[in-house]
Image (cartoon, rainbow, N blue to C red; front, top):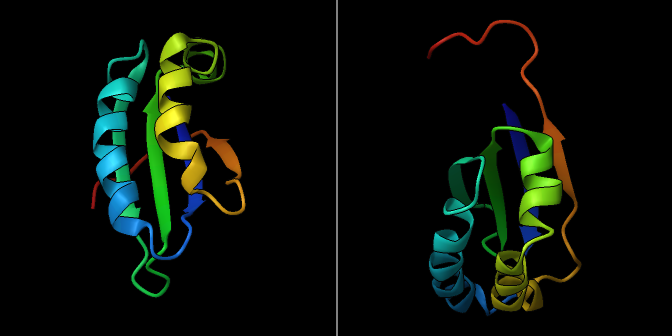
Length: 101
């Protein structure tokens, strides 16, 4: 399992608009092969900063499957104009056994 992590710096004042667009974009990404879960969190201290966490079966499901698809073009059209600067996306794997709570 791969965990995609992106800090999304939304243009101040456009948070509500971004959240509405993301609700639509969520349906796009959750329908992609290999997408296990999608979570969006808003920062308490910096309300125009969001944390996006997406679990993928494989790295290729994200980097080749999703990003190489027509669905990604829709995702980009819905969301990318909200970011300033453009976010850095990184991928993580589990190290050692995961422990509950």
